[in-house]
Image 1 (tube, rainbow over the protein chains, first blue to last red):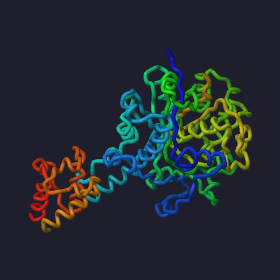
Image 2 (image 1 turned 90 degrees about the horizontal axis):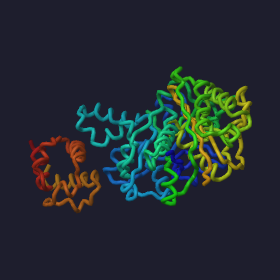
Image 3 (image 1 turned 135 degrees about the horizontal axis):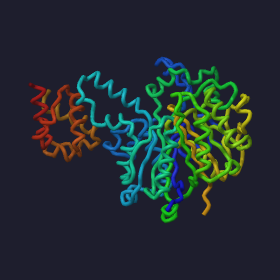
Image 4 (image 1 turned 120 degrees about the horizontal axis):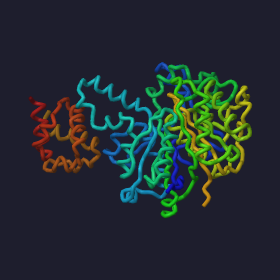
Length: 407
Length: 81
């Protein structure tokens, strides 16, 4: 028996806001979270633009032992997960007595690793590193910390799929619940923000060096875009079977109805039309929907010249020219490992509040973006069904389709 | 370093590191129970002692330590060695 899968908890610790109310306001007014981070210049960065979040103080919430194994990815993820758990009516006592899984997206722990290596280089003695570093250094840091804190008893692993990590985490959780293997899964994505995390990416020359206000640097689909803006934080999406959600009278933010995925099997960093085309089509087919059923597309579009063009072509070829499209990365920058989850949260906020967030900085289309319906300004609109794309290095693609819940 | 200085200094960094009320750190109290140490915490105990006093006890050294008095004996012995 297949189970319907609904979303019963959401949280975001984002440069658009550190709670859902602030994020919602930012989405409505098109407020950018991008800043110019001057220290990056001295560090050697080509581009100093970045989305920024504050370092959270976890001492009011967690013991020393719980905090000591956490660096940015886990700290940010705790903040977003705390919101999602509380909003969903879940607490450690309930979770301890039930079976809840956790599949989180994360693909780096650069800041933690560099700090550890610096320590051992200085001390020349591994026994002086301390007990927390190993749990900060491993890529599964979010999973191991949150599963311990919340006493989670179900499936427990990390998705590392570059900039599709957050989206695949929700997709994998969806498949497990749909098949009846899990009742509830905590999904999401986390992305560290520090000098070490994005230096090698910056070195590829893929980031914007536009001589303009930070808020104008990320301009997906715009003719004059010149690269992405890195960003980070964390987002959490708690999903569960409809039976479980109804049984505990949980809030329902939407229903996952389609998960498409593909691998380009091509270049390690260049996007690929065929791979994206297959991912979008697979999601539609899985959901048993037609292009006309999609009311909104939250595009992956990161503001790189080739990436946005390729996606515009894929959207046009699969969904046509009329479906409203926006990239919230115009405001957030590219939240990388977190993006696939945060953009589900952003889109759910839009769907539940009847509006489309603007693709800010879209001033002039190029030859491909002129063929699709990009929404440059806040627009009131009912959304019954949306599609969210995530594409990553290595050619890993993911497309999720979510509908407004109806019994 | 005199014993009273060792007591004062270690009280400060142990209460800071392990987030316990400094008044609970008394010579006759049990070190493991007072600081709520698990096996991983002994790794951090070594780190914090090295950072603050420049000596590096081993895990073996802690096997015989029960009270803070035992701990002060160890520190005093190592510092004066």
